[in-house]
Amino acid sequence: MTCDEARTHIPFYAAQTLSEDEGNALVAHMAGCPPCQAELVEALKLAHVLRRARAPRLPPGAWLPVAARTVGLPVLALNVGPALGGVQIEVQASPGRPRITGNLAVLGQKIPIMGI
Amino acid sequence: MDDRKLVAEVADGDARAFRELYNRYADRVFRYALSLLRDRHLAEEVVQETMVALWKGAGRFEGRSLVSTWIFGIARHQAFRLLRGEAKGAREPEVRDEPDPAPGAELAVRVRRALDKLPPEQREVVVLAFYGGLSYAEIAQVQGVPEGTVKSRMFHAKKKLAEVLRL
Ligand SMILES: [Zn+2]
Image 1 (tube, protein in one colour):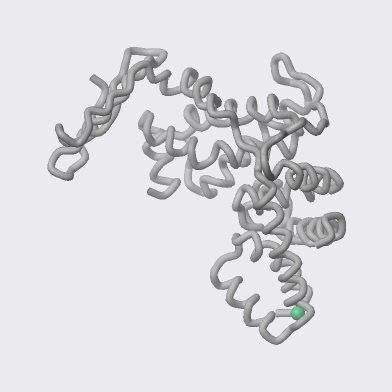
Image 2 (tube, rainbow over the protein chains, first blue to last red; image 1 turned 90 degrees about the vertical axis):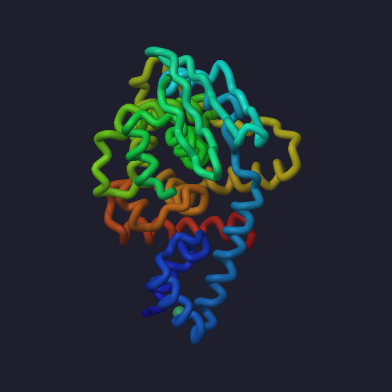
């Protein structure tokens, strides 16, 4: 691997999106190349700053308009708890007929509750 | 569960699988859309349209591309549609620094200003790699350019950001 190749891969290494093979080849090159090591330090600082700069997040309610147009809004959520084997169900008010989705845990096995 | 399985379940109309897919991608798509449009409301609209398109189109996902590139590709298409003003009620993107009292906000503003100094196609590469978790091959698919172009965009973007942010 040449320094030019290494330097185009270094930012992706810092972003943790290189494949394992590419990462290993890059590390092997950098082990013997101080200038590329300096590039890596810079890229890692950039990754750190980007991560620390509180990335913008969706407002919590953003799911609701999506749900309304797809699976339907949950109108009722029940959590019966472990006493009855841990039943958690959600009742959806979907555009079509009402649906109940959820999982019924019986003896450690999850049994899906299909549209009722 | 891997993304492909989730998409297959979404194609069968599984609401929980869809919610899980939303949880995995909504914020990442939001950050990406925000970097393209620079308007929170428009970016939220992109997330909504992208997720609805996923729900409707999951059955047509053929697995030739990765789920991530498929999703970011849809988001990109939606964002450019809004930029061209094709969508109903489209507004001009507004560039502004919203006051934000939360901790870390000052750094966030600095980073946003630094990203704003990049050409759009370079900014897109940085956001897709660092906030979207995409590889250069995946970004090449989303942007529709050769991998070499993505690598060179990233190389120049990193150089410029290191300079502006004084790393
Ligand atoms: Zn080198």
